[in-house]
Image (tube, rainbow, N blue to C red; front, side):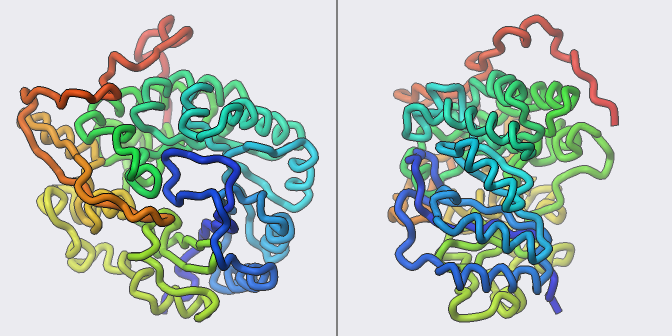
Length: 420
Ligand code: SF4
């Protein structure tokens, strides 16, 4: 009996978007051809409440471009679930923020992917950075709690410490971070992706910024592809507490989370590729049936048993953390190699390779088809650290590219101790 298995749903209510991000996994822009009608959406809200969902985050595309989005938000609240939203923040006026508050949207995450020039470049829209901060000021004025979310890639990573200062000063209480992975548009822009060995320079930076964020009251929240089991695991997963039992415990897709696409496709996690991971459509089956019976939503049910590691291959299969970790974030592994179970974006893995004088690199092998939530395939290269880096790679990331501006330079590196 898996009824009430999932408690958190992320719902793409439209694929229509007013930005054109070069790292957009869903290739948002136009609405999907058969998005759910208002009646179908409200029926889905009831079904979510019935299967035990406690919290729903509305996403897009850009969720507010759907005309009935506030009606849906209100219905979610009336059904006893919490309603949040993730937005690019391009176009939320003070009036809209008031309506959001009235509809019961109680938390919002605004995407910030760099300082102004980088953010506008990545988001494909001049002025999008300024408007995102204007949106934050509107949310603040009407009393909606908000945080930010940031994709870490070769363009945004050098600006990471300064991004923190900007969003802290804007009043963000939380900051979710995620590594950009090759899905959708990002699969076509592989030069902006961090290479696995570059994580060795990324993680100490994240840790330093995180310590300061926690001490200043901003909850830095590692997304599912941040980790795993490196020296900063407890700091990041424990959100500053560094408690013993705070560490990555494996992919939770279908165990606690659910993803819904705007045309009613149901997945175990919103980020997973559509083709390989859709368990059914709400127009053909009820939600309870899909959660209980679709194999695409049950692949993590073997966690903690020998079944839980059967899908592992490559380095992850040999890893000392395999049973607990199960190959990290399924989405991340899948979009690199077109199957899950071997995750190149892992700090522990990069450290093990470095100890042996090795590094891992990925290069595009098969192009993605050009559909929402699709992926291509990459080749994994293991080479000696002494091998010269490829030429013509101007975005190559190293720690000396990090902009430790202003206040960062005035403090010692261990200025912020976080007490558990
Ligand atoms: S190498 Fe794979 S299994 Fe091991 S910690 Fe990293 S992601 Fe997890």
